[in-house]
Image (cartoon, rainbow, N blue to C red):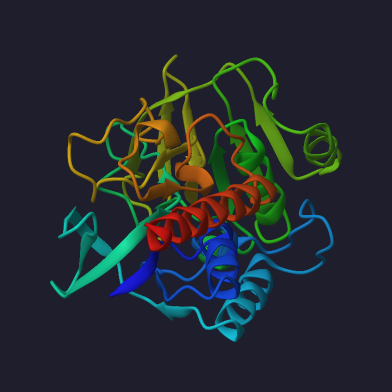
Length: 302
């Protein structure tokens, strides 16, 4: 029996693990497929106060800190959650092993929103990517498109600009109004980044006869953009598929704390109505852990 099971090993989950461990609670982190989630893929992390380094280095530091206070971290995923006895929860992992816990902290983060146009699914992994830091290496000296207009898209474009010959940002609006000013300025200063505003794609296909795997991206107004790869950064959806249908979510699959069952808490990008930033993930991870500890202490006094 665990006092706390934390689902997710990003900044929110690891912060919660640190606080629960320091609170002398028997804590298990089910870390999912990738330690650190999206944060681990950030090559240069500049906007988390007090840190200078990569996202992966920050995650490693957080992991070690949480483990130093007794939190147990395993790289397994939750498949389902059900009710146990006397107000507990039963978590079933992806290997069908079950774990019983008095409280749960949901910190499973978000995944990139999939591009739903012709050819996008078929060419995933063969020219279409959702991770610039994972796949950018393969496009040295080539031409790539980046779809999106927020911070993620501009960060991806800047990262790829140091690898690829040409980066073209495809954005359906007339300006990068959602992105931070410093990123807009850096993009404007990069000679090998071109911004295609008021542009959207309707189809992706392999270029006929191309020996190098070139793609043709057709825009909604009929233009054809030839490139070697397409990186998609059009937003995120919360990872909450493991929850039953009776748990209420918003349109992005995120959760509000006040609609969760007693003993269940939420932190990080899966939390509704917060900015998707590492700083807010850490803050909500702290809050969820302190609320879980208070809940457990109250139960113990009854």
